[in-house]
Amino acid sequence: SFSPSHSVPFKLYKYFNISFRLLRNKLARGTLYLMVAELITILSSYFIHVGLARRLGPAAYGNFGVILSIIFVTKILFLTGVTLGISKFIAEQPKQAHRWYIFGFKLQLAVIFICLLIFLFFSKSVADLLGDPSLANIIRFSSLMILGIGLYSMVKGLVNGLQMFNLQAYLESIQSVFRIIFALLLVYLGLGLFGAVTAYVIAPLLTFIIALIIMKKSVTPKLLASKSNESNSSVQGIDKKTLLQFALPLTLYYLFFTLTTEYSLLAVKRLLADGLQTGLYTAATTLSKVTQSIFTALPLTLLPAVSSAMGQNNLILIKKYLRQSMRYGMMLILPITVLISTNAFQLLSLLYSSSYTEAAPALRILVFGFAFLTLFLTQGSFLLGINKQKTATFLT
Image 1 (cartoon, rainbow, N blue to C red):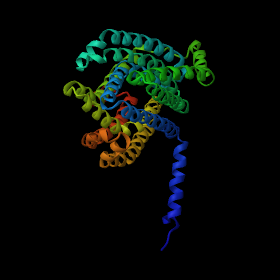
Image 2: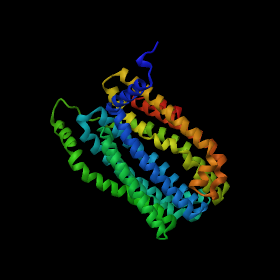
Image 3: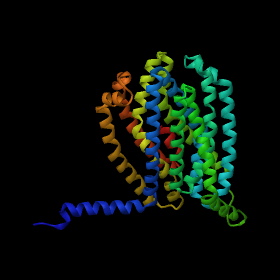
């Protein structure tokens, strides 16, 4: 007996109908926006890495990877907790969005200043620790990345907390475009490693300026609306200690997670003291982070969405978010991981040239580690959203 509900056309119709209804969901739509932006970021980042690897050679390219690792760890240590904290509390308390943003911005400026001082005085010590004193000046200069990243990340935290994911995706895409243009241009002009680092300094600063221009029309009215509520006696003031209590374990959580992903490259640089090996390992880790890079959008949208549902005490919606995010994450991440692992030699040869194919054995293993770290990062964002910061930190 034939049933129309079992036919292939009906199943396809049912699939696309479910997909369409899924895209009408704010979380799914926001994730889609940010995934497109992340795709642009990934493509631009890999274009930069591949271009620099071919242009600079393994040794200089390895130093470029080391610089980015140092900045990334610094960014997580000093900036991430405040940014995500602002995003979370703006999502939970939209009537106090103006107060949270002003407090967070002041706190972020203080942190940026402290961070720049640390780089100014300890860059030489870091270079000596890595076994390459020649890196001291470039490490000191790279600290300017923190200025642009810190300013832009506060705007990103505000936009994310207001769940304006389309604007966040646009800004992320703009930053990626700036980075690739300046990186390739400055390196082509003969500035080498210094030119590549300069591109990473300029891109977030320009994006921050553009964000301020755009926010005058789309975001500022919402902030002014929340500011007008401050005179309302029924609206309570913000609890600043709550942000600090949230930011500290959150910072530790992301710091441990980042050290998991970045420490190995720094160890290769320090222990092997071989520029070639550092360059090869940089290539392997860069390709291994494909899944983590693609699915960065999911934790970013999951945190404010879960926080908002938590504020409404909607446990059914929270469970739905977790179930769907893990299901779709595994469906997409695991096939990509297998493909990269089984074609490691060919990918390195195609993208980086034959000079980097010795990194294939490392890539075959690393890509699985980053795949499961990506799934863990999704679970961690869920735990942060339901105020289980200590649990997430302990697991990390």
